[in-house]
Amino acid sequence: MKSLIGCIPIILVLAATAQGQTPTVRAEDGTIFPAPPALSAVTAAESELSGQVFISTNGGESVKLGGVVVSIYSKKDFDEQLAWANRYPDMHTKAVFADGTLESALLALSLRAHEWYLFRPAKYRTQTDADGKFVLRHCVSIPFVVVACAERDVGGDTEYFKWAVSSDELIGPGRLLLTNGNLWKRPASMQ
Image: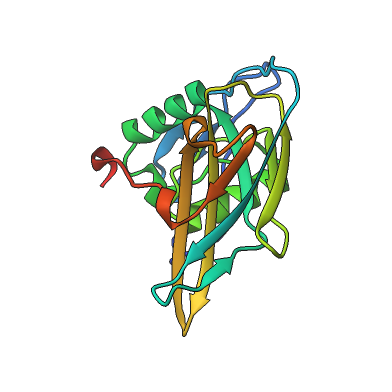
């Protein structure tokens, strides 16, 4: 499979066997990376998270971002996935992870396009509507992290936005806004 992103050739090799071994990812140059940690089993009662994704321009205009995938991870899962990415700092330039389904492969490629160092697709995710609004039904208990990536074309240039927002930033029960004010800042260890 050739990546359209930066013309970096990427091959996804899932070396899982019938015995259920952990899949690995292989880059075209032969580098093999272990799969990211498995996600925890979900045990919480169903909850609802709603919100909106928008950015404010320098001119003071609010731009609602539709079609944005919004995912939720337990804080523990997010931290483990981020620690895994830190252990393999060049992994993101060579390979992406997929669990064998077309959907996860496309999501992995999309996340790679945003230089987002993710992991396994979240079990609970949704997509924003044309007004940037979303409703996400999930069974992840607090503390959790809401993850999203977006892009927009501005006069031929592409702006990229990434969020990894803690449940500590809820603006009310089950309500979260993803804006310029809470964009994810890459930890110094990943720069």
